[in-house]
Image (tube, rainbow, N blue to C red; front, side, top):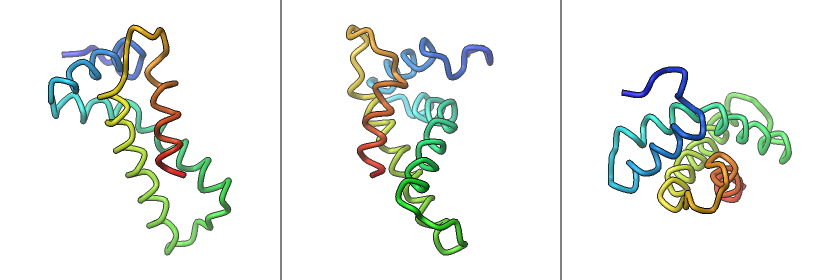
Length: 101
């Protein structure tokens, strides 16, 4: 089991990516939980950029954007190539942003 201080750092993300490539559903959950701040932060950025109002009706829209980000993060985990020397969060950010927009 991973130590709390490791959760969310790049080595943790890389380990979770390796496990996800082997169809580990628990690793998917851990990766999403550890990076929820990144996903929600990007969703907030997109909501602000496109001027989506935070009324109750539009919170549904933000939830959909966040869900797209989660699915894109899992796609990024499956495609991530550790040999490229890029942090997972940097790689995932681009894929998530494209999916959310």
